[in-house]
Each structure stands twice: as C-alpha cells, then as structure tokens.
Amino acid sequence: MSTEPRRPATRCAHGGASRRGPGGANEPFQRPIAQSTIFDLGTSAEAEAIFSGAHKGYAYSRFGNPSVEVLAAMIADLEGGAEALVTSSGNAAVLCAVTAGLAGRDGPLVTHHDVYGGSFELLRILSSIHRVPVEIVDSTNTEAWLDAVSRAGAVLLETPSNPLMRLIDIAGTVARAHAGGAPVIVDNTVATPFNQRPFDFGADWIVHSTSKYLNGHSDMIGGCLVRQENLSAMHRTIHKNLGGTVNALDAWLVQRGRRTFALRMEAHNRNGQAVAEWLLRRPEVARVHYPGLATYPQAELFRRQMKHGGALLAFELAGGEEAACRFLDRVGLILHAVSLGGMESLATRPAMSSHRGMTSEARQRAGVSDSLIRLSVGVEAIEDLFADLEQALAGRPDARPVGG
Ligand SMILES: *Cc1c(COP(=O)(O)O)cnc(C)c1O
Image (cartoon, rainbow, N blue to C red; front, side, top):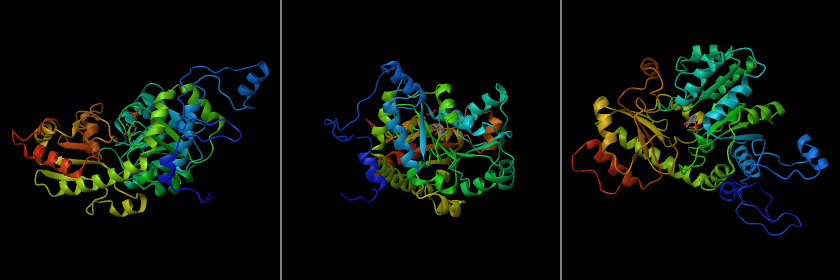
C-alpha cells in the first residue's frame, strides 16, 4: 500500500469510515452514533483512570463523546490545525474562542464592525453585561485596524466579511497582533478551508459555523474551533463548562457532510464565479461584491490569501429597497431564506434579516444598504440559476416558474 499522504479530496471522501482494528472483529463501514448521555465507568480503579486522564475513556457527553471526537479530528485535519473542539453552534464556537483567547490577557477583544451579525450581538452582550472590553474598529481603515490590533488582548476577524465580502490581510494582522502577544482568531466559515488556509498565515485559532459549508446540507446547527497548536487543559475546561456542547447526532451529520465537502466546494466555486460575472453585466444591478471578480478592489490581497472566490456574494439593485423586496418576492428556484453554505441557493436582504439587530446607524457604517441582496449560490445547474435570476430581475408578472 502506498505510504504517500492522501490528498484532501481523498481524505474527505473516506473520512469518518472505520476499518478493522488490529485483531478486532469487522466493523460497520459507517461509524455508529454514540447517542448516550453517560458511559459505564467500570471498577473504581477504571473510573479513576478515566477521570485522571491516565486511560482514554468517557464519562458524560458534555465532557467528551466518541462521535464528537471523530468530527473534531476531521475538522483539525481539514484546517491543518493540531486539535479542534466541536460546539453546538457557530456562536458557541466564537464564545469559546474569544474566552480562550482573552484568558490571561489585559487588552480588549478587537474586532471589526462588519463581523457576522450574530458575533456582533454576542460581543455586545459580553461587553455590556459581563464588562468584557471590546473594541470594534473599521477594518477598511488599515492604519486604525493595525493600531487597535497591536494593543489588543485578542483579535477576532472574519474574511471575507459577510455580506460585503471585504477582505482583511490575515498575515499583516497576525504580525501586528503577535508583536503585542495577542492571539488571532479567524472566522473561516465563509471562505472554508477549501478556499482559504488561515493557519498558513499564522492565525492561532479558526472558528466555524458548521451549520454552513462544512455540513453543507442545511439540516443542523453547529460550530467548531480549531487551534494551530495543541489545546491546553484550560481550553478544554472552558469548552466543557461554557456548555455549548454538540449532540452526537449533529456531530455525525457534519462528519457525513464532510465526505462530499471537496466535491461541493468545487461546484460552489464554479457557480459563485459564474453568477457574480453574470450579475455584473445586468443593468438592474448597481454593484456586485465578490472577491473573485477581476474588478474587485482588493484583487491583489485576494490572490495572495484565497484560492477561489467561493459562493457567497452580495449585490445592490439600482432600483433601491423596493427593487430588492420585489426580487425576493419573485425568486422561485432560489429560496428566500437566511443562512448560507447549503447545496440550495438562498437569497436574503441583510438589512431586514441578519443585520436587523444592528442599529440603522451601525448598519450604514457597515455599508449594508437597504437595496443589498445577499446570495448564497448553491450547486444547481447554472442555466437554471440564470433563468431564475433573469425572471426575478426582469419583474414580469407572469414569469415566475411553477414548482421552483
Ligand atoms: C452563521 C455564522 C456564524 C454563527 O453560526 P451559528 O451556527 O448560526 O451559530 C458565525 N460566523 C459566520 C461567518 C457565520 O456565517
């Protein structure tokens, strides 16, 4: 058998399946779902060995669960990190990573104002109720951003940002943060490890909402955090006691989704690029935000930092808020729904959905206009996507296809 390391697409396709252990009986190819709260601790001596860590074992599923550990190992492998922790949502992963990142540090958690709406809300709670110092900076002002980063306790950044697809230079941020001793957490949900490798640029932590591309099937909520280096006992204690533990079935679903991850991402990237270029040629569309476009303002950083443009994009309609609402009323194949990263194409108006928790002033500062539509491009046949976009933009009253 070849001893060459297998390529990521191969590891995705085979990941999670078990093989016969040395001397053991044959095993089911698909891993069982360890749907159990508790585990048999055995004798007092065996229980002691499990609790002390002298012997690998399980006690209670919030502390550890075989199905969850299979997924954690897979996610660490996907991102090229040492170890990962799995959580019940992307928000729980952000909470864990921010808590771990700030531990033993004096400065504020520095982030940018166009961070994901749920993360923004979470940080607002941390700062207003728990008095965690949080500094929210306009990352498009590079000087202000790097200055804040150099004084940070920890940094949370998201690139590309959601929904405006702005990029932040990971390597440049890491250099300044590390000079002051601050760890850098990168939310890689939108880019995915297929399109962007934050650890290659020195990031310390990566967080994901697995509800999006990693699971890819729009049938669960989950998250994870990955560390470039090994996790400490403190990191595990934070994860265990903050309580955002994933259940075995949801962990199992994500490990199954990972088997088609490489295939799905190839299709997502192809469709995302095609749709962005198509929209750019439309007179109804005033502006397209997509990093893979030749006209993209941060094209140089895109080439340095990302492998592909992905499948999330946003566009502004020339007809303003009214045209944006009409577009959402008319899409047929494309579903009007929040979230992203599933195999089906989804459209939303961020001002009304993901960003409605922000004050309108904060939203304006973030550049989220009322006519902005966010599109998560799925893996459908591209001709069907073009046809649906065409009829939704044209706005002819009889054009909506039946049974979309
Ligand atoms: C969805 C999302 C989150 C939050 O994840 P949940 O699974 O909804 O808790 C965090 N960051 C980004 C970029 C997201 O898209």
